[in-house]
Image 1 (cartoon, helix red, strand yellow):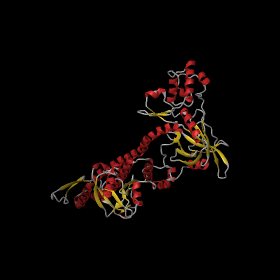
Image 2 (cartoon, rainbow, N blue to C red):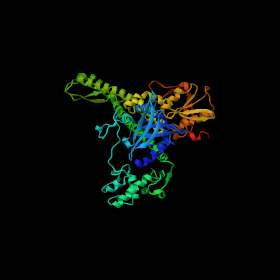
Image 3 (cartoon, rainbow, N blue to C red):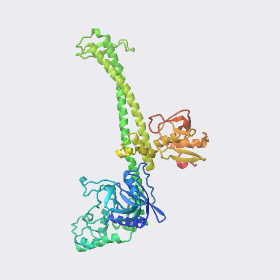
Image 4 (cartoon, helix red, strand yellow):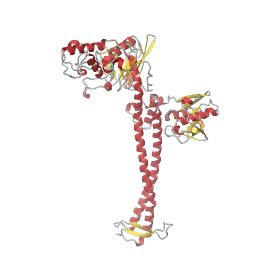
Length: 573
């Protein structure tokens, strides 16, 4: 994927021609490594996406929808809002042949004094960064990621430090004289030429008509011409489709050219890169969801193992009465037992089935008969206490398994990032996912964000039916619905809560009730099992007990209806 300085030279040219002279209306950060600038100018609105995570990139956003910002903004976001919000973009440019970009902004402070600010974007993969620089002093006012020289970097990127771009002694791809004088020694071009991704280096070598080894003047001259053409030739933005996906400023001959492979063409490189990442974001979302699904599965596996262990120990506790009986029999026969005996045979009058039963009881010869009896009573008491504790532990782990299973179901069915954020917030709030210090300070805001989640909504014969997407929304449905609305849930299975908005009347037709019940079955663990029983009652008879897990409620005065699963696509049939 050639997201190199070469490709970005075209992207930056497009950004400059589009955004220069426009005003920054809004600055948002949906995530700690994403910045979205809402820019207005020339009677149009543009969204500039700055992504500084593993899939680092900068481009205009036209067809994809940015993620929702957290209620409590990140500190860097607040700094940008204060220092460039409302400012005018003067130009967008690039550090020559580097993946370092500058957005120069004219901004007025609270007193109306003009400030020349520069938003610096370094697109270095996982080491990507953003910094705001005051051009009057060249000092950094704030930076997304602090970089210290002690961490192995050659420069410091810190607040109050002067900003210096990364230094490189590589050759400019447009400096023909240095290319002719260079000694490549058979190494890869990316070790000697600035701003080339491996595939762009391969393209330069391919177009130069060589095998990648540049030792003669003729070969070096061909390489210089090839590199120059890559920068100066007309762009033809495209995305390679099919089994392999990539985006290019124009079809690369080294991968097949425009005739041999399938390409989707775009008017701008910004559109091509957005289209490429729009497709990959879907797989990224699955990967992100999987980061939470697998740990939940691991916890479920551990919990089930605990249950098996507890149940095995509980079975062992079933012989507790045997120790009590032995203690009683030793006490009853204590007059004929002498210290030093290793066992005693006593008539077991507790065996009602066999009146002549004799029980052989082991004794510790170092202890007196009464001490032996006490030891058996202590074992009995200990096992009896363990039995009670194990039963409690089994109930606790059973509840944990139910909660984990419910969250696993939510995660496997989540459809978008907003829904995932709601579930993750709930997981963090109950301690199933760890929070870092910054997240803990925003926990209240995150909870408020979760409260803004919206369930599925369907309309049947003019009646609104709402279906929770996850346990958090299930709780919200109960909390936010009117007391006479009708609540439905599949009997005996985890799944979505369904609420029929009765408009204060408390009654609905059989058709609406049946379809609402069908939705309850469809959005539950019982979806693949055909017809199921669905309980329904009014919201005023549904309650959430204090301390109950997300999505867990109790209800009374309910009725039951049998329904088959109804998919949303079949709701109008």
